[in-house]
Image (cartoon, helix red, strand yellow):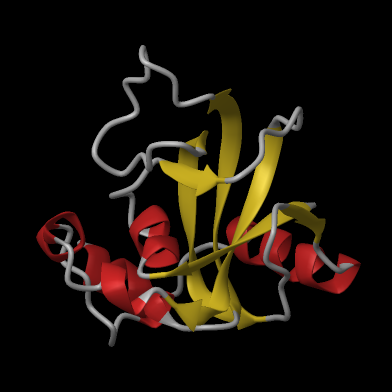
Length: 147
């Protein structure tokens, strides 16, 4: 399973469905399932941005953790960020915008080491744990809390 490490609060914003892209310095030819890993670093300057606050950034949310897998998404497209870019307010000028669809937050973060700087391959045990979590039915408590 391919993965990408994203700093908080952006990993949280992806996992919670507020942000449908990841700004990256390079393009990739890869398309498919992508594990979203929250890096060990926080982008402190971003925590107070209006779009982050409007999304409801909550550092106490379990998916706001550091050093853990928090979601799975489908990487469907990479925008070069040129003059015709319509990627929205989360898109950073001068970077590639990796478009994410079908984002599925994990029920709980899975602690794991990641790697900054583009795609990396998740350890097979991490990939297996993520897949198992996505397949298991919600617990009784989760069903009660979501209804």
